[in-house]
Length: 186
View (cartoon, rainbow, N blue to C red):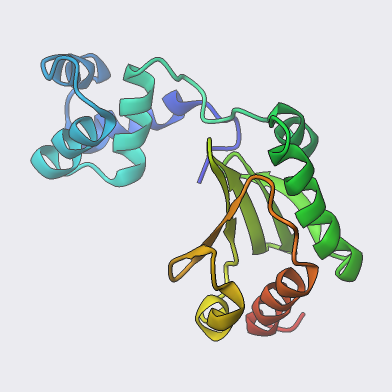
């Protein structure tokens, strides 16, 4: 999860304390790999040096030039950065859900818009070049709604829809309803 400030360097003192070497050493180690991808850099730190995923990611992304984990400040900034038709579809997805569940709060978490109730995340969305990914958050909602998801990309926790998806409000409401049923009562 992003740090409150979004600053990746906030992890550096803990990395140095846990692994016994200064950050400059770890940046040099990453540099010895040359022009490799993110996965190879993560593997070096995690598999060879026992870094946690959080610490490895903070260091790798810093080395790759990203000093902050925060890319968008609020949901409106996220939506505004999307090209059409993705922007229109993403807005329609959240509108369909919040029309039925107005008590859900729209926030940014993990640099994407998420709906939550209290501290519990209920639904999220991320955008890729050719599709939107819906994170239903519930344990069994996607499996239970399998036949209704025909034609969409699915795995156990996400659904991919085209950028110009004809929003199925009923499906979205059912996904959220199932997730809310899993949450503890207030």
